[in-house]
Image (tube, rainbow, N blue to C red; front, side, top):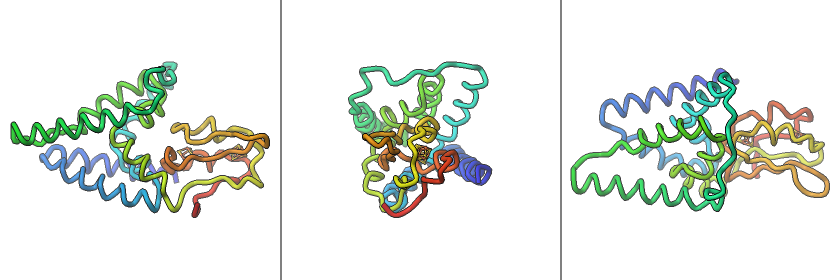
Length: 208
Ligand code: SF4
Ligand code: SF4
């Protein structure tokens, strides 16, 4: 399954590079818009399987681990959660202005691709995913309403926190008096890491 997931990511990354090289990056943005509607049904699968930034961030994370670089949590100024909306507004405005004034389709995603890699070298991936990425701001909003998502069977969960520790999106918290894991569908990008690691097979992808 891991190999299939990686192959899917690499194929979409290759498609992104192809569109970028041929000046058709607007087609990728159209794909992104479609993915927002799919997020209403399947959750944030764009972020987990399609996004070229996530693919490069996974590679960067792997490299950081090999080089034993300690990554940091979010700085305080980012924690209020508004910054990704600001980056979204700035990105859209920059694209519209460059189109209107200079008649060019600015490859804004290339810029964010570089930023995402630089941030992942210094900070935990959830910092970029949840607090900076302009595309993530929209995916969170639509993903919150998803019909299907990873979720925890509380009768089986023993609160061991393995899933919480493995989730790069900070989408799982073990909470409550009874210490049960809860998944936030707005943050979950529907990878399989938590499901694979759960010793009680308490996590499944199902209707909310
Ligand atoms: S580890 Fe689980 S909760 Fe976290 S993003 Fe992946 S599927 Fe979602
Ligand atoms: S890994 Fe499984 S048993 Fe452990 S806290 Fe997560 S859902 Fe519960």
